Every structure is written in structure tokens, then in C-alpha cells.
Image (cartoon, rainbow, N blue to C red):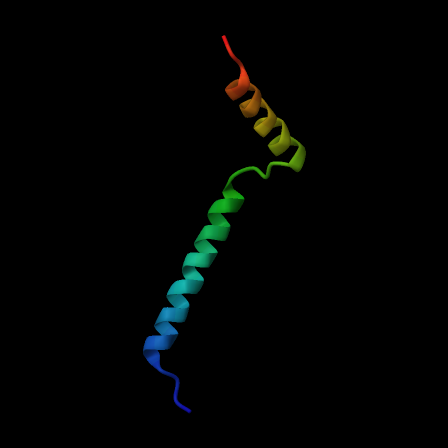
Length: 51
């Protein structure tokens, strides 16, 4: 069964996009669950605060 060059190109393009996404995500310092929780709590408190 011959390999369709168009399929190969499509698969490569998708894989490159996935790799780019993964690499760009690793550029940012990883945040812990605790930091995420604190951040969302701070945002909620800010929204709920009435002057």
C-alpha cells in the first residue's frame, strides 16, 4: 500500500502544531494547583467586593 504524500504532509503539519503548542506551554513557568487556586480566589474576591 503506497503512502499518500498528501496524508504525510497533513500528519506532519498537525504534529508540528502540537509540538509548537507543547513547547510554548513549557516556556511559561509551571504554576502549581495552589497558585491557581489562590489566583482564582483572589479574582473571585475582587469581583464580589462591593465598594
